[in-house]
Length: 136
Image (tube, rainbow, N blue to C red; front, side, top):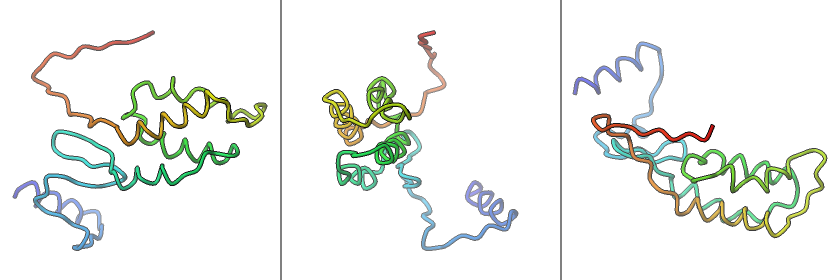
């Protein structure tokens, strides 16, 4: 109860307004900003991801940039995102003529599919040792 009280007091101290119908007390999960968060994990809101399959294949640079705006938001859930997206990123260059080659279509489809199968990101256990891998 103390945390709830202190949280509400903080909201009141900065003159924020809350909507009771948007408040959920005692929930184990929270859906916000396209994510589903719990005390131990962070996942993607499946309702938001369904929108990616409604999008047709990009036909111009604006559409590919819009696609990147969407999937880039969830990049932390897609292993090797930048390597997979590289063929599509080249389409954003001013000098590049827009052409969806086989590699680019594969990258587009892979990213769409990866969002639907995106794993939950687990919170670290700070009692265990960490291993850090870098490619510098």
